[in-house]
Image (cartoon, rainbow, N blue to C red; front, side, top):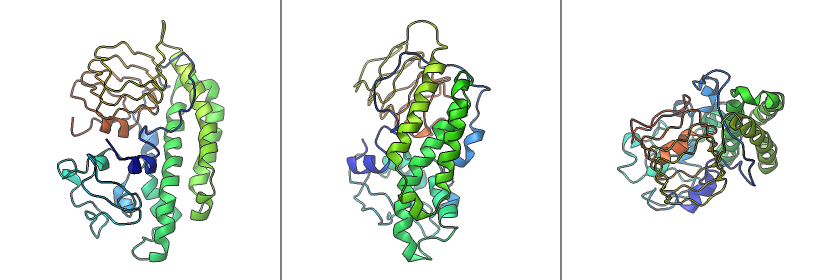
Length: 303
């Protein structure tokens, strides 16, 4: 499991920090058109245009997920001069599983190319500290943009779309400020505002699912035996599903924002149309070729 140090830096081990209180009891279905994720290309990591920021800015502790200790601001020993990882294809076998489940949502290249105009911290050492401090803030803003963009793809959420578009413009504008303005952003308050819209989105979308829908919001389901469970349209917002057996579970149109899926077995599970699921959550889980995924996400290589 990721160390507490890394968890805090990554915005908590439950990826989506947006979930915070009780949940309504209705759930999801269709997109305005099946989304292929193309509208979120700028919210996907582009390491070729980043100055290896996640390999320097973030700390981690020696654990099951990291082979060594590293302080914030200290370059990882595996970082090469071209800002690429020297063991990228062997991270798991070398003891760096934690790196394989991290997703910056495109924040790395935004800080590198927009906030700092393409000047890297090696060429301009005075920019190193502000650049490293900007990354965690930018990552949270990009995560919000990911969820809002997804919500705008969901046809049943049309009543919320005007507010979502305003939120999108607001958050995107904040990502284009300088380093000083980024540090002034009240991320917690912004998350609360956006989360309210995402909750409304979830209610509208999940209401499309017929019958009674299960509410496991924030539930402690570590190691739970849920093989074959009927969780279509369920709320699993913020649920702790570490090591849970979800083989062949029906998770169609379930709300998975913030669900901790580390080590959860999704072999043969159906995640078609599930909402607010991220690539990082999938990368932290187990699965196989029979696992059905939302169109915007890809099957992890280690499955």
